[in-house]
Length: 260
Length: 306
Image (cartoon, rainbow over all chains, first blue to last red; front, side):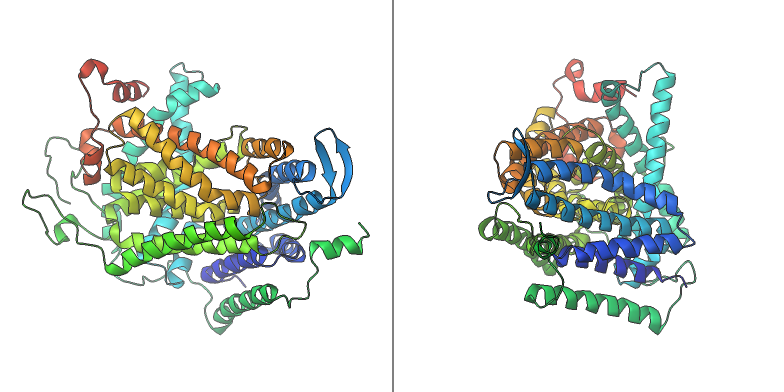
């Protein structure tokens, strides 16, 4: 059964809250594993594309945070494993780097799963179901649909300049051409406002406070219960963590368990 | 559709917007006949004030109560920073919405897409320690005012965050500030000459860098972009704490980044035809000063690169 887009958005928000709200590394690891399983079984998400996205987005962060905290951790009471001149591999630095990366990787995985399984129309209906103002929902959905269009237009503009003899493979040339390309993008956007206005007017945009969804979505007590359950459950977990009564191991506990 | 220029053949000169036609708009004019928008409701002022207070309070809380370097256990600092900044941004978004004409709302998606396209390529995938993810935000701030700029910044980071790169969600408060700062700078005439725009951008980059510091240090450990992360690693290697390294890197990158962004926005706006600029009354604050045609550099330079 496919989820209602509002339920997907709520689950996304709850994942964000849990990953950043509970300091135990178990939570982001669990979210990451659940997302891998979700991407593997989902018929709407191509697993290889999803995995490639996660690797491309979270991979550089692993390298950078590994270098910054793994080799240059600034804590004074750190247990040094190896030293290389000014750089030192420390237990605390490595633990911190792994936790920070786990959080980012979990969030990248969840958001990529949402992005691959959704489209602007579903996002628009989901935002409206969550009582977001119509104008904001329109801006969000329209921006989602325009991201590939903006990239396409920039590529076309660069191709046109390349045809006129500019060496667009050079960074300085691209920088020099940037102003003209962006001005062209802005001019076309402003001149298209009229067309967009007419199209939206003809479709009756803004006439109804809650427009009818463009597609059929599963409704009912299950979806509503899932939304409220996830929201309340996440709040309870974060509250318990803040109160110090959540029985999940911290990074220090895990290090002690492995005798590090 | 209203049409006031029968010779241009390029559609309406008056602002046209989704869900609202100019002819249906309640006519409110001052003595000179210029359209005057109704005053925003009191709750919007309260929401904006509360949002700014929550963000400032979160920053001060981090600075005064949290350690400058995280230990092996992350603790709840990240939750405090995330919640404080996002709640503040949500309040600012709610307070901004009634102040923004719908014609600007229709332009926002394009600028948000522009922010995301440039920011994703420059900010996270190149070794340049800059971001270049707020050009559209600054343009909206200059042509439509601080509220529209702030809302564009917030929506950019939220949409970018839930679709491509969730790491930017936590930087929403800084994006809101840069959009608002562009509007304030434009209102003060900061976009009448290119050097004024560069100086205004550099000045706006200081608070933006400071706002982003706790996020970069405590949520991402300074390791987001290749270029920015390299600077943080070098500073930590030189003995700086996580917060100090992120502050120095943030200030350096943001001051340079916003100066470049404001200059680019100036050039893009100077290259716009007057007819299109006139659709947005706020651009009257940014009318480019030219001594004579021979020295009208920016607009001609931008136009010649078409």
